[in-house]
Length: 473
Image 1 (spheres, rainbow, N blue to C red):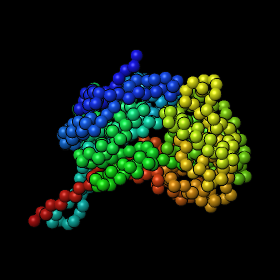
Image 2 (image 1 turned 180 degrees about the vertical axis):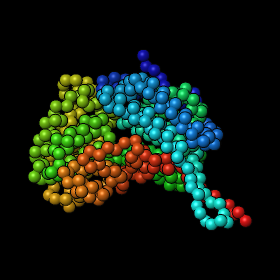
Image 3 (image 1 turned 90 degrees about the horizontal axis):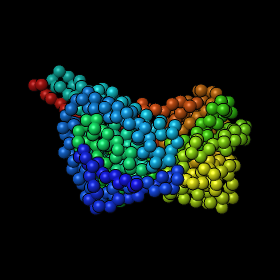
Image 4 (image 1 turned 90 degrees about the vertical axis):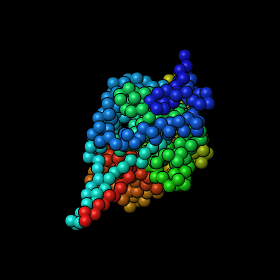
């Protein structure tokens, strides 16, 4: 039986003002899922009104008090992990290991910011004995968080935890295709004791919910994860209103492998790029740049490994029908250009992958740098390889992109790895598999956006600096 899910506004379920609901789809089976409320500007107004009313009292609480409540939210995520994983699975089709990681990291965001908010404060400035001057870190008020369909719960928590820790109230607009886990999280947060009105969810489409939310004059900051086109649209709204925005957008990130690297580990990293969330991650390192002397050897290893991947076991489906069609169209256009894949390049015609929106993991080898498949974000399980000669060419190829989100370098010469990492134009670069975690700031250069999520830097994103100076005479 189809279940309908309402908005969550002011600490309770709220039916859509227009009375309409939107369908969802289980991409692993193509069967209909539950329905979510079709939001409207009226619903946005209700949510922002409640958020604006609740926020001042929240901001007056100490960092320790806010942190204690965020710990409780982390606890309910852990307690209800199995339920949240199932809600995510039905909406996204992801495999269990991916779901477990994302839910565990969702709780980790709340635990991290519950701790660091206790050290989140201003400073005193010595202007001599005649004055007392200090800074305060103050919240923006109401934050609009517009989150994507590829990591729905995880991305919501990534924005929610630091925004709430800094003293803001939040109105979340999740993707209309994967909203249910975010609505459930809001209910759980209320049950954990988070005051009503601090965490609101309005579901629906971008034009009906996202745009009016970003444009609401009571919203003090906008955070968005998604496509470059939508990011530009929201950036224009924020610019017209003169409010700041955090934009985490697309990527076509390089994975650079030198001949002296540990090729087994480098190959595993390349395979992970197409397997993890079926490549539907903006930070995926989908351009495999390999030193020419080992290019063919590494590509052979990668192709053999991806051909062993099993749909529904090692990777999930493409999450939306529109994205599924987009990836297949990309294959058709690439084939028309004369380039054939070393493996993959199609959907599944039979077997377990055929019943869902599964795409065969795909590798295009020795791709010319100017071709669209080497430059555009496919957002699917697609890897392109490009050979290089020497460090200078590797760097030039790595930076030959409009994007600058992530980079990865593999080399037996650690000094060279760090040297290249510092010159790659990206917000974060891993050398020899260096970890990027909740504690490490995340964000882009160039068309990959601006602002930072994760780490203590995200806490600063959600607070304004005020200077107070008192004359003592």
